[in-house]
Amino acid sequence: MLKIGVLASGRGTNLQAIIDACKNGLVNGRVELVISDNKDAFALERARNNGIEAIHVDAGNKKKHEETMDKILRNAAIELVVGAGYMRVLSPWFIKRWYGKLINIHPALLPSFKGIDAQGQALSYGVKITGCTTHFMDEKPDHGPIILQAAVRVKKNDTRDSLAERVLKVEHQILPRSIDLFEKGRLIIEGRKVNILPGDSWLNRYSYPDVFYSEGY
Ligand code: GRF
Figure 1 (cartoon, rainbow, N blue to C red):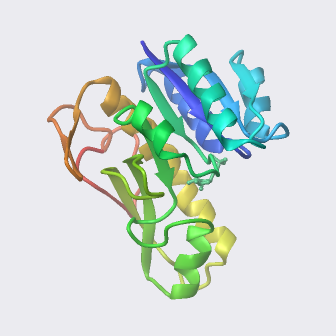
Figure 2 (spheres, rainbow, N blue to C red):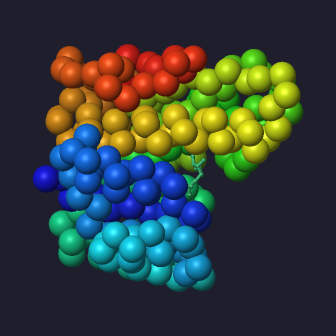
């Protein structure tokens, strides 16, 4: 079973999707611990509610924050670290230590709309299609090799929140699936590209109409 560590700053719906996917057998893994830079993050509450260790690590001092997280993750023998709404930029030091074992979800089709409020950015730019992306984290924010993407239609009457909600539902699919692919050893990083080795698909068991999933889903 894959030992997963999750970094989260907020409400933790992506964390919940991972926990659920592990519980219902979609992913052969267990969330061993959740770390948050925000002591009031609902993600920590979700962890506790699910019998998972919930740890607040103060981020007042970035170096200390990352050293502490690194120590916690190593002591727990974590094999994959997942950024699930973790709202800080990790330093090159941390990234180097975890490169290839550190993934993130972003609520846009990268490289479009990096940074915060990607859904609001997409809506005000006027794109007709947006979506979400999972990727290995590298030293630049929202930049590393892409694992999966899924495209979602922008509707005429969408508000920032209605669009974000639609994208979020799909985040809850591609993030666990990315973890599943990692656990199965199917993700091979080749420079900027991730080669996904052949195997099963979630398309027939866990997909939505009107969503376009990249290869590997
Ligand atoms: C998600 O949209 C994620 O893509 C972004 O922050 C949001 C976190 O949501 N990075 P949640 O905390 O998982 O509910």
